[in-house]
Amino acid sequence: MTPLLIVCCALLAGCRPSPAGNVLGYLVAERIGTLPPQAGTGASGALSGRVEDAAGQPIAGATVLVAESDGTPHTAVTGADGRYHLDGVPPGQYVPAAVAPGYGEAALAGLLDIPKLVTVRPEETTTAPPLVLPVYAPPVLPANLAEVTNLRQTAAYTATAAFPEDAAADVTSYAFDYAGAVVDTLRLYLPQNRPAGARYPLLLLVYPSPVDDWQEVSVAFADQGFAVVAISPTAARGTDAEAHAQDARVALALARSGALGDAIGDNRPVALGGSFSSAVLARLLRAAGDDLAGWVTLGGLANAFTGAADFYAGKLTIPPPYELLVPALGPPNLYPLAFLAYSPVYYASELPPTMIIHTAADRILPIDQAYELAAAVQAAGIPLETYYYEDVSHYLGIGENLTDAGREMFYKIVEFVQRYGEDEP
Image 1 (cartoon, helix red, strand yellow):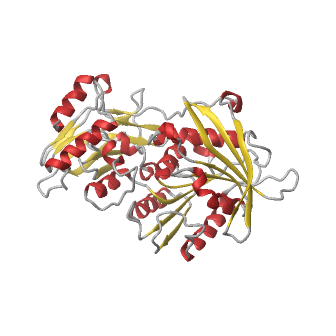
Image 2 (cartoon, helix red, strand yellow):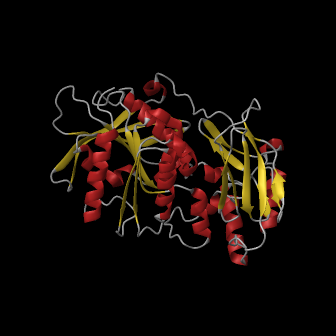
Image 3 (cartoon, rainbow, N blue to C red):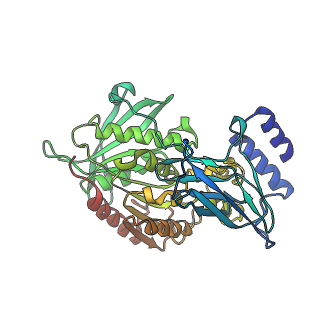
């Protein structure tokens, strides 16, 4: 099947291509040598327009973006009149997208919500139709959440870790039902020998792979005097980071409501994620808002557009099952929302206090992602801490793979959580 036939089938179906169709188109293009080329050196054009709300009022401070076919982004910020101007855009067809504080991401669309293309020509300025942003509103969670989700305890046991020395925690496993899936990856880790009525700062760990594979990490943090709520993607959601983020939001709400026990108060936690779960965390940050007191991103994704450009340039080494995740999102110039959703650099002003950790040896998500996020967070005036190191690990190496850098990293995270986490409501 040729790429043209794939596109025609999608248009006839009246919908955007599925992830499977996107991957098929990528594999065909790879085989015939038509993958997205790097930007040319010819004359560029410009794009201008206006961003507004549903009532037609201008939105100031919105980030507007168009992406080349390989993901390379071109951005501008709207002024008080909601207008933007993008210079230096290579000639071609694009779907503009935007996001603003308090507003959801949106892309220019036409009839049946089909992406609306604008054409940029050399040495000309193209004026795009108005881009309308909806008010951001995450799904409303019911007050009786534990009952509605059928929260249930599935196991209780004690776990230990080699680091720190003699580390141990009491572990409770939970499952709940939400949005058509059974989420059985929720774990609570508490310090042992707790005094009656003791409450602890809450640390929310969002892991990229099965939660129990990270037990030594969870135990290590609980041993430092934290109530650790850990969750990982459930198989039923596949690679849908938005759905995983809503599962994590439910877990957070259950913990703060007291449904996981009285060792956790209604205090705001620090959240930690990395690798694939950094995409989950990016969506959770928007949905949870002020419910998070801070966050830590470890080897994480900050800009999915520049990440896609690195992928198509052959700079990344992505392990299974994520090696085709980028092409599954579709062409960035046509479907930018799939990338904008996982790019916190474009809504840095909404982030809580931030800690960025990255190794220069990372070939899955290069350290440039960390540098880009740090610059955006600093520009937004958000409290920022960084830890850049030289190591072979993409992950938080605790246990038999612990390195000196991993040990130092661990205690820096502990200090960050102690600084920003809340002990009591």
